[in-house]
Structures are given as C-alpha cells and as structure tokens.
Image (tube, rainbow, N blue to C red; front, side, top):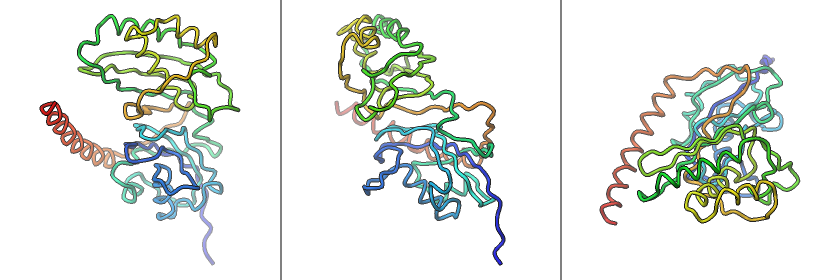
Length: 277
C-alpha cells in the first residue's frame, strides 16, 4: 500500500527576464510561452504539483508581456517533501529562476496576503534631459501618494475591479542615461505602473504640468495614457508580514553567474550599436 504523504504549504520567490514571454500568467487557450506555463511544466515533471486548483495555487501578481521580475511570489500545497529552488531550476529555462523558499501557514495566499508590491522602472532619457525635468517629475510624483481612483491609469480589462489603489512611495533618481522610478503600492491595476511612468515623463518634458496629473487623479478629465514600454519595468519585491523566506545560496550564485554573462553580452552590443549610430 502506497504511503500517504503529508501536505505542506510552500511559497517560492521567482525571478525572470520577461523578454521572451507573453506575460506571467498562463494562457490556456493559447500556445504562446508564459512564465507560469514554464513553471507549471517544471513543477509537474518534478512531482511537486499536478493541478493548480487542487494545489490551491496563487501568484502575487500578473506581469505583462515583456515585463521582468526580481521577486515574484507563488504559493501552493504539495506532498513532495524535497522541494528546493535548485531542484526546480534544473527544469526551468535560463531566463526563469527560483532563489528562495518559505513554509508559511496553511492558509497563506501569495496574492491576498501581500501588503505591498514594489516596481522599478528604468526610463532611458537623452543626456539633455535636465535637472529641471527631474524636479518637475518629482513634484508631480507627490500627487500620486495616498489612495486614489486610478481609472485613468488602468487598462480596460480591469473593469469590474475596484480602481482604488494606495500609493505608499514614489522615488525618482538618475543613473547615467536612465531615470530610475521606484513605485510602492498596496496593489496595481493592469499597466498602472507603466502609465504612471508615462505621465511623469510627459510632465518632465514640459508637455504637461502637474495640474494635468491632478486632473487625471480627480477624474476631472478622462484620458487614455499610453503606457511606457514594458522592457524597462521590473517587479522588484512583494512584502508579507511574518513570512520568512530562506534563500538558496547555490541557486543565487548560479543565477548571478548567468546574469553577468548576459550583462557582458548586452553591454558589448550596446557599445557596437552606439558606434554604428
């Protein structure tokens, strides 16, 4: 008689480069590659989970096509007692990796239990982008702090969900040719972070002023803002009260080595392209 194994709740921290994927969420009616699709395939092969619904599976968020993550979180039930990040990584493509694991309480939900999510956007700007433009962006960013109706900063697919979200923090800095925008909120609507970035860039350029942002937030105007490109957005962190993740140092070392190789490649290509220009 087969021995019945105990069920445990597991949470994983996952990073990925979203360039080659049609977003995080699996698309059952389509064969396009997704982060979640690759993850499920690995978990099934390793006899960790067989069915998402039966495993009570949840993810902290759904990043769009081309968006990256440093710390996405998923949670599920499993009867496999030997789950480790390095074990899962052996079945994943190089641009998706698991680096930390937690054994939370049985009711833990990676989506509902998150108290904040943090995104970072790398906004490429020409050298002539002035300190005055940064000042304008920072002044406009202060208007987003607090709870607001973000209907003007969301995608139509979010209809039916509450448009109210609370922005806890926006910080704007500069690094070489990039403006770095950090946004922390209780939660985000679809494309909300990228639309905020786009609005801030518009104010920075002088095309609009911060009163335009205030009008958008107070719904005095209705306007479809074009989101900033996906390639600059990273889900940097998801926070949970009382959940302790244990990082796999071997997995982190292997991931770092791989990313450094990518960095050398892309830095070299950037110089080649710059010389051609």
